[in-house]
Length: 248
Length: 80
Image (cartoon, rainbow over the protein chains, first blue to last red):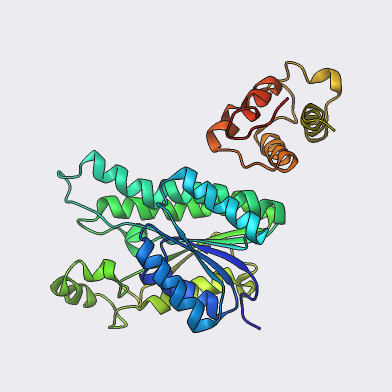
């Protein structure tokens, strides 16, 4: 029997990268997995592949995580179809930045809309189901950059720092209801988001990783799985670094 | 039970008030209707009427009367 046998799980931004790998891992462990993304092509392809590979029930939901109405409809659908929600992984996020002096209001609004406000909204929606169950696990994605800062990444760092603190606040508020809220803080992980910064910068940054390698999406997915499962039944309010001893 | 009776039942049970306390009752008028009590009230209304309320409406539900006005909106379609 898998670690998430028959658990109803929702993973946002699961069309690629960490979200997709997490969906695979969850499916492998027996979960029913709802996965969301803005890209219909990516999410449908992910759902089809994961369903087939793991003989699992993987349901794609296409919507922009900042659309409050669509997010509510998604939770209503999960309630109607599955009757409960056991795990929420707030994975959807964007990385956009500029140097101090060139940070415009729109950039700040765009990053905070996805990385912070949508996360808060999803926690509120998930709580509607989890509080009735008196159980649930919410996992947010912070970042090493959110905890330590990084030159040239003020806005992204601020948004992921916000995720760390809202995780702790939500844990304090929801744990009396049996709902655990934790976050992971990945370092340099080999995804499209990292590849976008270019090979030279990646090689340069790798010099600051004591384990000497990039992390893989599976490295993050495995920790998320731990936090989703009953193996972490007494763990809440934690921010777990997954960075191979990186310094930023 | 009609919708008004259902609505009143929720208020009376969650906020532990009697029938004659309902009219004019407002958020924070009584100890039981604090923010924690409010979320309990919302949860009970959502269950009673099988709806999911938007955050703005949850915030705006500031009185017994306002609640009926909100639930009667097209979004929720509760007829009183």
